[in-house]
Image (cartoon, rainbow, N blue to C red; front, side, top):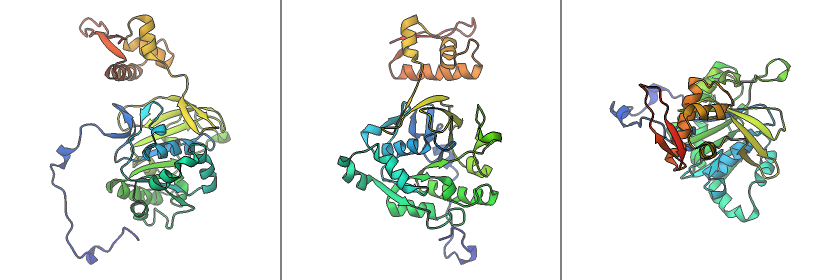
Length: 332
């Protein structure tokens, strides 16, 4: 089962791709979860969703599962569309599988039974082999299930000893082997604990538990922050394939297993009320500050451009850099 083979035992020569492959790669990543520059799940790059226990990692992962299965009720999450996969979704319920089943049951109904069997495959309990020691097993499980998406719940059960760099590098090899085969990955994971068992107020990618190779090999990393069981939690996009999304305040509906953005600033409504809106005005509203940073202004500009592309805003004044006159947006 191991990917590590004896080179001298290979019966055929290796084949290679031509150098011009770099010209065939798109200038920006494509997404299976995202829109425009706002990409949380990039195609061919794994997504890590991390956080302390009880903040809704599995709840978010399960909504993504149903979105990738193609159920229209789960076609978007946090305002960003989820593109259905072409194959099945494989859910590796490695940690408390019965609890995972009860959690997902909130999200579906008996009428979904046949479609669930067609679109979703579930593995319960630990994987057949440690993925760091046998890097081919993740790809093998996905192919045997007919899946082009795998949800790993959770990463600590996929390989033993994730703080060890050799284990981290071994798991990353398993991840990259699966990604190269066209399999999208969502990895649910935990965070380190600081003094008193609390994480930072402004978490970073360094808060992710385990070897640095775990996050180094991921394309997008989301980190949940809050208190266990809270309905409202913060979501930080601490590693991005393109633009940073958020931070977002997430509202979990524990009864129905649905997650939405809470307290989101409606820039289209603000533009309608004011008549016009600049990137500076938008950043001040989005980040609740009188002096937005250049990075915050750039995020606001991208948001305004996205609303314009959706037909919700129009550019009423292109502005003039020479005179420092700002671009202004107005209601469509």
